[in-house]
Amino acid sequence: MTKKNNEGLFWADNIANEVIKRVEKNSFLKNIVKEHGYIVYDEKTPSGTIHIGSGRGWIIHDAIAKALRDKGVKAKFVLSSDDMDPLDKPSKELSKKDNENYLGVPFRYIPSPVDGYKSFGDYYFSQCTKLFSKFGIDAELESTGEEYEKGSFNKTIKIALDNTDKIKKIYAEFYGEDNTFARKLPFNVLCPKCKKIATTVALDWDKDKEEVHFECSDNVVKWAKGCGYKGWTSPYNGNGKFPWKVEWAAKWPTKSVIVETAGKDHFTKNGSRMVACKIAVDVFNYSPPYPSEGYKTGKGYEFFNVGGKKMSTSKGMGLGFAESVQYAPAKMLRFLLVRTRPNTVIDFDPYRPHDMILLYERYDDAERVYFGRLDLGGKENLRQKRVYGLSHVGKVPSRMPPQVNLSHCAMLVQTFNEKKLIIDSLKKTGHIQGRLGKEETEHIMERMEFAKKWVEEFAPEEMRFRLHDKIPKEILTKLDMKQKESLKLLIKILKSKDYAEQDLFNEFYEICKKVEINNIDFFKGAYLTLIGKEKGPRLAGFILAIGKEKVVKLLKEIK
Image 1 (cartoon, rainbow, N blue to C red):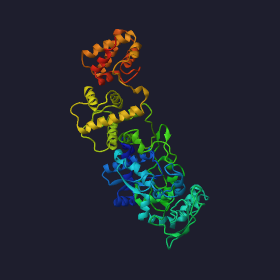
Image 2: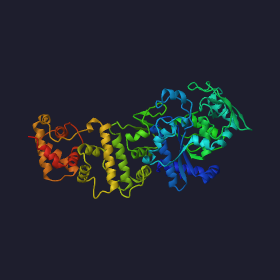
Image 3: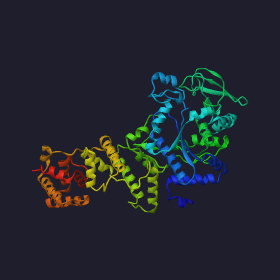
Image 4: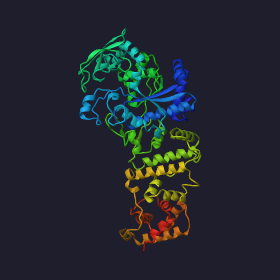
């Protein structure tokens, strides 16, 4: 497929095409895929609250795996918890004593801060993965620690230790001969006495016995104390782990990875991806996964910023993946992440007045295109249909669900406190036509529930209101004669016939002409009468949603 023909495709399909083409022309990769299928891989250290930026990577990988399967090849997304990584700074989730005891210990061996989980690492990883069904993420989950214990890395551990000089040379090439990793064996032993991994240093490798001589010392890192234990041990079956950059390279042949991207910070010059690619090629004789090829790293995906700030797990900044569903429905966040190309920065803030409204509008547009209710033109129609298909959580319905935009939902939940009244209003305004099924009703009420939360927690003040049961006296005194006259005329208009929203809106301007009142003053008087504010929801739609009978009854209080 030529680049020109490729341009109209969705980004995940472009990647899937490129990956399949790469495999087909590489006999080595072709054999791997024949045995294992297309493995799309990602990993995350469960060092604490995992931010939404990691969720971007998970959804990117999930979409790529789905796009590959849609092209008829065997593909799966595997996500690993890097729970053999050590606690390297005090955690707010642990007591002072526990922080002192567990600094330098792998997360899989630190107790969970909450009962019911295997470990600290399991707790934080699970907080995210238990939400995967809501996000529509189809991933095979694994633990890097368990993979070490099962012996999955034994082969690559031996290769790395046998090629220590090569790895040292690679580190020296990138970072200079004084770099720590340019002077040590590429393996960190798990101390059998104190269970720390950050405080050990591998001193020698006996190739014949396949044992490592190591020491657990206070001199390895400044932030954790070793116990002084030293001796020989097998490096296999969970007795230790690779340093990070070596581990990344080792995972690719160990897990037969064909696709694994990451945030762009890993792809900087002399960064972790560049080192891992070099080690993968020179030491493990493995072709690095897409987007890398040989020594060429390719490009990682852009950041997910919330309110202009980059997310960081280690610094405790930003929005956590697990807590993100408190700010927006999971399927809307998935849509946001899927529709945005990986090389584009996402800057989203639920507190910004229009971010959430716009997100819902874009989702509804894609849905209308998918069901043939909106035509945006050939290429854009194809793109929107693909976005909707890949971002939809669960089975796509056979017919388009009823759509109610977030602004209208926000208006309804502040006007009515009963489900029946909301449904009745939507029928009157034409949002609902015909009989509602159970799923369609649930779809509407799900929006209403979030709209209520959005109004209470995120919406700007001008979008919040309370409909009057009776016009307060102080409001009546604020209305001038022309405002009163125009509102009395509005009563006659509303009683005369049923109106569509646009037709009623047009009548407002006819009223202003007859009464010779400024448009602004007319709307101001109407809003003061209904909600006690000078501005509010779109007036025509608001009146029809409330019900003209109720509005007429209220306006009749004007004398």
